[in-house]
Length: 255
Image 1 (cartoon, one colour):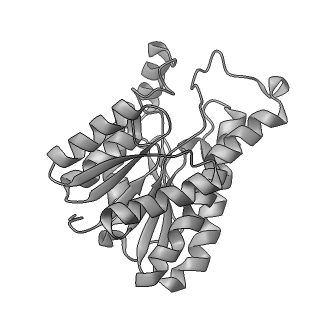
Image 2 (image 1 turned 180 degrees about the vertical axis):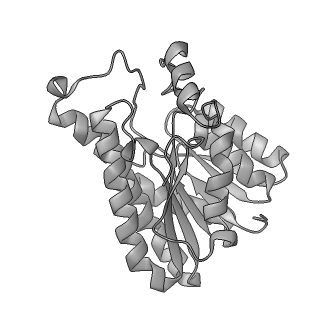
């Protein structure tokens, strides 16, 4: 896959999965807008790594939960690189994947659901609204939204998080149906448990080992494992795919 001449915006790219995605796109020639919320030094380091990998990179701060900031992020990306070809919605509301400390249903408030919904569907809504006019201009482009294999197999009932990611799947499929005739594709990648990331830092080793033992490939994902499927859905290699959910969890979910 060659992304030379392509411009990719990755939200939440200052660390974890997002940083791995940014580096992978850049290694294949892309110019990458590395969006971050708070950790400027970390995001700048990722942008430096993008340039060292053979592509280009710039760290851009924005809270994509805010419509105005999301729109400004897209415009700054276009101002920096002259265009935009791919949007990857990876940013998420803060969450801790800790099976032992998670809130049970009776302990959750609607505000917990709303926070996750805003961080998943709300952020994607804002960035997609901002980027689609640019993709329509050339009648081509790709949007990849990060969801979760928990939408299919709630191994741990993280109620608020999984409900929001399920809604993001519905959002993505409806958008795919509408913008497909315009040449724009919208797909989802659904990772399983990914370690190490900030969100999975509290997941005990014993639980990680149990998930690995139940997984056909006998391990859990690293951030770098998510890059290939995302790049595939962003590339012309998947040019006749839209509205799909690609599970990347070592075979834990098969369908």
